[in-house]
Image (cartoon, rainbow, N blue to C red; front, top):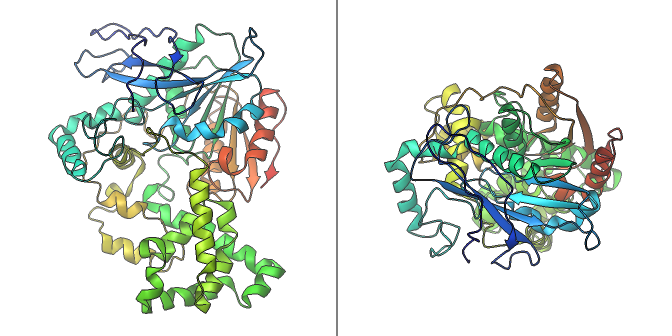
Length: 479
């Protein structure tokens, strides 16, 4: 990977002075991730005070931004600007690069600005050496880098607070306000998954100069004890059981199985536990986790009943086909040097703000998780991963669990079969925002769709987005 352009905006970092954001100066990117794109960024303080001013410290950070110019005739201005806020935490904006065709159809004539959160992608990282472009694993941790990275963070536990949701929100606010000064409206902000939480936190800091906000796969209320990250397996299982029930209700699917799908699945689980050779065929040697992961991809999800039938009969062709489908789906998002997820950032933010288990059930162990998930048919590895985080957390601030005082017009896009940010959780968040009377928030339901609708339900996303920017009423859609 090559170094980022040095022609970036300098932020004011002196104690007691405000962070004055000005338009960034974009130049051709020095990498080859997205030919034709422009790159820039913003130098930001490692820490902000309560008023958002920079606190002088030697650890100033850089927030990377990539720009895709509007697809308009030469000499014509863009019709609008869309900021794209990635999920995660720990995910870079590179997840949007391969989705540019859908974005251009959904926002014709718009330019797109895509930042990497602090701690992710090409922005400043938690582990400066181990997550650098020049390290053996590149942006991903590799081999001994895991140990040295985690040890270094634990030597400075207070450093974790510099990578909080609120710090990232202050970065995003500075970016949008700085660029807005040089552009004519309309300006919109789109966030997906964790990105919806980050956008809401940014709006808690004060109004943004934008015409509207689109929240794709909205996170549930932060204090919801039934849908925090420790409950992810239960969320996944609810969706998985709906998928099995749909097979039972479909004449062709039910006839192919010849029995209730859940009954078949339980028999396959018993066989897998009794037959190491069968279990060895399953990626990760965990059938519940594997099928839980299939729920994210519609083309794989629909094959779950038939995969179970074949596993019961001892075949392998369906499993081979499903694995190829999942590989192809992942490849459709592209793989760039900045793509690897920042695991340290995932651990710190998730355990600091989105995992309520330590306070609800202190002393919770892996054995407790095993008992908790014993009767589930679909699970996620996340609760067990968070249990052994191994990194410091930061204290929750005054923004935890609260909502913005003011909201621009907001469209929420939510799939009914979302195994990560559940539909019921999004409904609860929309209801809370509506009852707060912060602004107009509408829900567009995408029936039978999973997570990340820009990717998994592009036609529905295009319909909803074009209606929203045209000022038309939201409509539901079916995948």
